[in-house]
Each structure stands twice: as structure tokens, then as C-alpha cells.
Length: 170
Image (cartoon, rainbow, N blue to C red; front, side):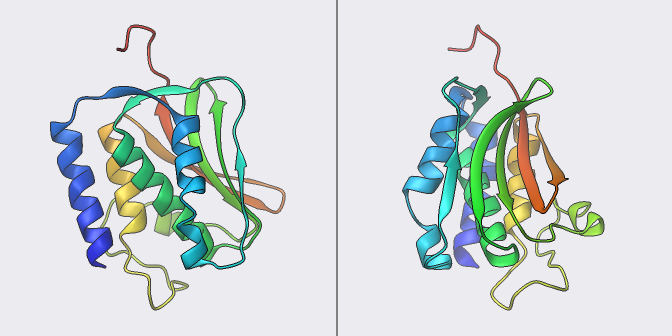
């Protein structure tokens, strides 16, 4: 609980005080998977990385984007069903940092409350405090993004969708 509260506070603070940088979302996805923090949460569950060869640059803050991605992955590991994949892709002219699993996904009424802190679904585990999607929503709001979901066959995908950075970004 304390880690997530601190993470949310840092994300909110940083979005107001840290200048946006040009960041390749592939690096964010790579960082999330390579730290292997998910091994503690879900030992034995392999997390596949799916990134292309082409840069997908957004204007943002590395720390905040990593926190959002880690929270999406944590939710998939806690509430979803393996196999789990972390990826980056361009969808309709926007950059998506996404997590995909074989679980049922988030109920529409729960997704509608993603910006609210301490919101838990009826299916939430005991150790869930309901801050994960609140952190993702704060990052989305800070960087002109949104949370989008989709289902393709048996796979549920949730993504942080962000505008692709313009060429003139430093």
C-alpha cells in the first residue's frame, strides 16, 4: 500500500514539475520486463516482450511511464491469466504501451472508475489496494493519453495510449 501510495504521489508530483522528454516506448517496455520485478509477484510466469524495430517516441517522463506500465503488468499478473505479454505498437496514429493476457479483462464499470483511488473490483485479491489503475490514469491524464482496452479472441489487452511525439521534441 505504501509503495503504491508513494508511487502515485511521485507520478502526480513529477507530471507537474518535470519537463517532458522524448522517450521511446520500446525502452519503457524493455525496462519493465528486464527488471524482473514480476518474478516476485508471480513466480514462474513468463512475461513475453513484444516490441518492433522502429522507434515509437512519446513526450513524457520515464519514471511515470515505467510506473504506469508496471502497474498494468501487476494487474495482469494478479487478476489475469497467463500467458502475459508486454508490448508497444502504433494504433490509429497513437503510441500504445500495452499488457495482454488470457484473462477476462476489466469490467466496463470498473474501467469507468480508473481515475479513482482505492477502487477494487469484486474479484480483487486481498492484497489489492485499488491504486494501480489510478496511477495509470494519472499518467494518461498528464501526458494527453488515455487507457484503452480491447479483446482479440481469447486475449484481453489494456494499453496506455499516448500521442506520438512531434519531430521537434528535444
